[in-house]
Length: 468
Ligand code: BG6
Image (cartoon, rainbow, N blue to C red; front, side, top):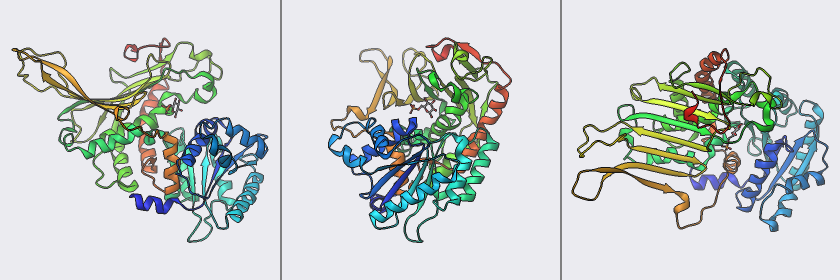
């Protein structure tokens, strides 16, 4: 989508309805991101946001709650807050939707036209079915007329708990909405350096010829966190790292690094390529390096079962069943309570043989490293001759970091990008139904195998390499 098209699509009066408007995600991410977009003039001039939840708030106390989570921009805060409304009710009762109907009608009256509506489901997945049905039956999801007032639904992961439930959810979504109205959020796709994977790979011919199993030895994708499950035991137990971040964030990063060139940068082409590489991916739970771990003390956190087998760490060996990727190994790992926070993709090339240097150095591999968190950079590791009479080589790095540049950069939170793209109707950074199904198909054999096995126990703060 070019810039012209973006600005044309963007300045149409739009209302966000956030189901679960008082929840953690709304307070920590959605409202702060909407406010950041507001400050940057990246929201339609005529805009409103309605929080919908069962908690007992008035419009005034809800605005106060939102205000506590907005950072900076004091001169714009009150202006933004005046656009915030609150409707109280349970997600599974008709009253909430009746209340919303009249609130939205009032907003449309004030603005003087039928506005676009974005319905953001920031609620526990157990409410999805009933909420979606109500949204549909109440007529809220209907567009105002054929010209104006589209409606879109933004839905947070998890998209189901396994392949069967993911299909059921998709069937429901498909019955109520068209695919172009459905925005399945995986906030990893919207992280700046994750987006850069696709640009870096396909904007530089330098790397295209070697991006295959003939030259690449292995690709490691890791999402390591130092935080533990903390107060999320009730949610996390029975979900585990594979479902929490493996089926989605990790496999999305994997698909970006391994997909074919889509040819065109639009939702149809990019999502198709991401989906088709996932369809050819196989994870081997029995491989020597594969492991399922649980940190010591996990079982005693609130919400975890005393005999829980839930994994808080996993490492898996993967391959892609295609001529292009024959010979390359993929290693996916993610977990909590680990030594270091690091979201990173490391592409290691095969060794060039023979080395023309005086003595072979251990591990003479070129590497391309995408650091996604906590630092954001891309490093290309190469070898160069050491100055002097001998033919010795040494590893050197070319590093690109946004933060090295002279110009100050405008930080964009992944949720800002998600919400902005939902307004302009760009689905590139959202998961398609094909991708969601393919990702579950990849994970199902591992989930089935590991549910009959106790995870190995590791100490909090462990080095992931030592979890065996
Ligand atoms: C969420 C998971 O989707 O992603 C969390 O539910 C995880 O368990 C989080 O901590 C990681 O996201 P980020 O953006 O903090 O790396």
